[in-house]
Amino acid sequence: RSVIFHMDAVQREVAESYIRQLNEAEAFSGPIVTEVALLDTFYEGEPYHQDYVARNPAQPYIACFSAPKIQKLREYFPELLKRQSVA
Image 1 (cartoon, one colour):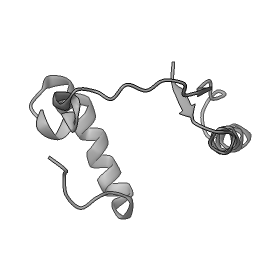
Image 2 (image 1 turned 45 degrees about the vertical axis):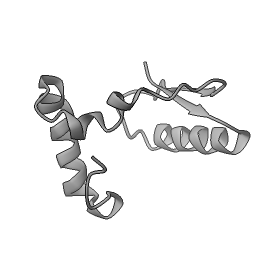
Image 3 (image 1 turned 60 degrees about the vertical axis):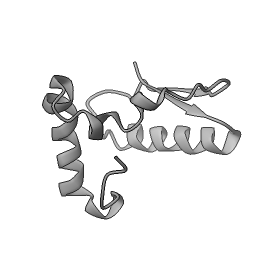
């Protein structure tokens, strides 16, 4: 199951509003069940976890699942993506 973590009431309302809009538009075959929860603790990942996709393009999961999704994002929303990797 998915979750959106918010840090304040404004972020919570933005997330809930967007979910509500998508549900009202019947954007998916069923209702969105993503939980919206307060972010109370955050632990930054170790350096080797940072930019994992860019650093591990040959890893099987990345090659089969992540890379194709990123390619679709580049095709559909090129203006929203950074021009180059941070790796």
